[in-house]
Length: 570
Image (cartoon, rainbow, N blue to C red; front, side):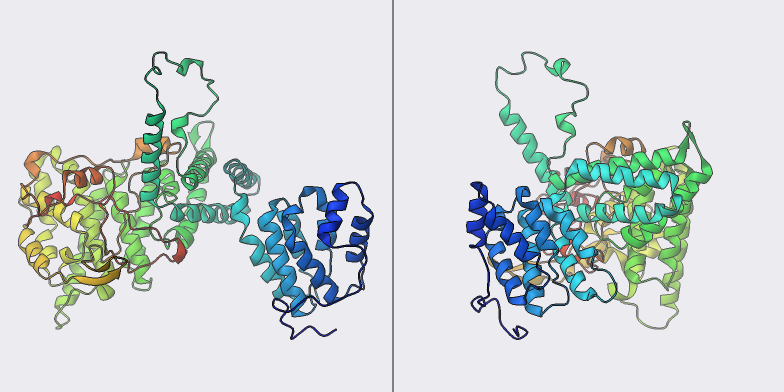
């Protein structure tokens, strides 16, 4: 019977010769102990001469009762999975794929069987396109069977394989880190913080007045995980577990009998760096996965220097895409600001960055054209400037505290005034919070005066009108570079124990370093606390210019550990 042009979704079933009752009736009889029609059904499905119309009718009936096809009916399901569907009419192929999709979504116990069936058709003389279509449908439901303990075991054992088959390590790291990135970008920093706050409020609400009279901690088993160590956000909790596994693997792979093995560490660094270039660097606004490399670099200063040199080469290379150069600058500034284990390297990196920035300004001045503030043309330059400002915000104290005179001489030698005053006007496109904090610090030490430029820029900010659910609203783009600082504070509770000793937290500026602000024109004190926690106050109208190259549908909001807006002058 010809079915190629039949609209099987909207047309009635084709009448075919069959024996026994309907599938629903057959399953009901089987449940009561009468298996005659059940066995007859399996026999008809296994018929090598089965017709297209028969397959379609059976599959439509099975779809109507897919919730009843539990593990008790696995022999029946295995019979259906052996039905020869590849290469048949489009109507059969499409109906079969719909059945597979429904089956896997309703009965995840058959996921592996369905995958094996599809893969078994990757043989010569088969229609590979149809197989891949079925595979894509099935893999959509893999996330529904995610389990924190299963993922942990899977990652642990995959990594263990690399210990005795080192040639697989790079591929294994790519698979695991790729999965971790998907979790990372789907759990926005703001969502994690909100979930933790709500969990803390709920936990406090559960406390009764009579509770707390006795300390029950001593009665708790030591092997029961602390309730406080579990993330309230389910995706963040899974990511936390995988981060702990990954960092434990990194430590074990680099140490032998408690001592660092230099060659093994170098080999692992090369593999992780390769995955960083391929997956992590192009992913916008990931919050935690990059800390695997941060942790690895802490083992040896030479590794941190090699990582910084790698980022520097990407930033200054004109052959690299602008989006990657900007991302490299973000990593460079954030790493310099946050890594405790590179105190000496900071000045050398600042010298390189400022030298490149001054050369860039020279090239614009010598071009004979009027330079303008254009992010699309000068994106890497602006992110490099922001990296310098951000680093100085975090590191100026260390530069000045031992020898104030030499420290000031060094800051003045950077010629920051030329950078700030140049026609490209970096203060106009850098994050306002970074700009205002940088201005406050440099004014205090009389290194450069930024406020005249900031006030002029504020007068020239054009509002952006956009429509929302409540009507048109007037906003401004406060993050034109779509900036994010990759090493903002780490939020995952279990794995953070390995990061905390290595991490430079934000230290509040002394009163002498701050300028008085006018009420009503500056950010609130709460915004200042946001910065101390590594947050940026939520602002409407932020328009991203560099969307995630990893998965645009999983693009999380820009979330940066930038200075508070309270220090911006009117």
